[in-house]
Length: 301
Image (cartoon, rainbow, N blue to C red; front, side, top):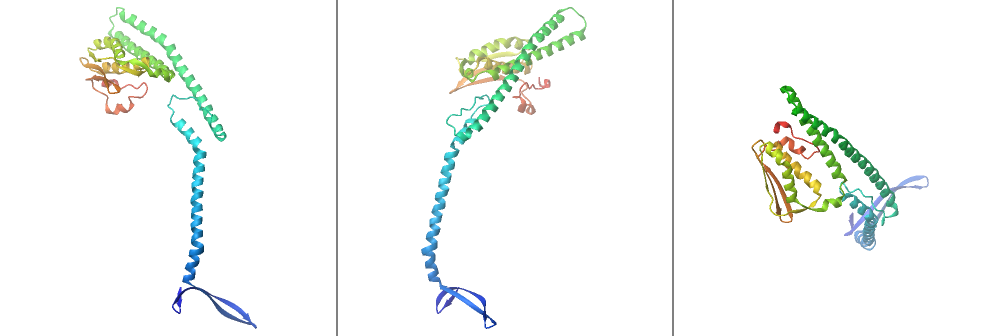
């Protein structure tokens, strides 16, 4: 940029060699243009073109976004359908209203679900069959141990061994019952989990079953139930849940302790409390209490 006679110019210069009668001369070529004409050219040519290109680019981005959104909408619906399913919802995905390109993916997912259902059913059937096969010999073993305990014998060591065998057989029976309950829970249709169950009556029946154990351990077992309390669920599974809670409270509370089962309505929900004055669950064992068949060390009893 340089002024010429007070007029601002934008110039460019370069040297060029010329041949004239066998001699080489260097000539400097200078091209200049006033800045006013340069700005006028930018305003009349380049700026409208730049604005037009920007609008076209924005329009292209919007069209691409809309096109991708419309094309990917069935895929997003498929993703939401799979993500919203629970662990026990293993029905095949219906391919209706899906684009032709997505059907191979859906077919592959459905085949995987079918294989998973077959494997799960086989595993569940094996657990149930094994538990059923174990119940009879365990019951016979427990009966034989009881018969041996009733016989007159003066050997305290033998009596101790029989008591230990009886505790072991009853633990085996308890594990077998839990295996059957697990198989039943996994095989229970979701429709049965929405039946109306009177929780107060259910708790009363559980307390009747555990009163003998409570008396044997000198536990004051009580209830605070009140009115009828209807909840949605499976009668057998809820009964097993309450039985586990009450049985653990009675077994782990020191002799002479107190266990109270209370059920009350709190707004739209029903609250079940199993209150005892036992030692509680050690802090290091709390992360594991919801694992299958986990049992706190006997040192805490």
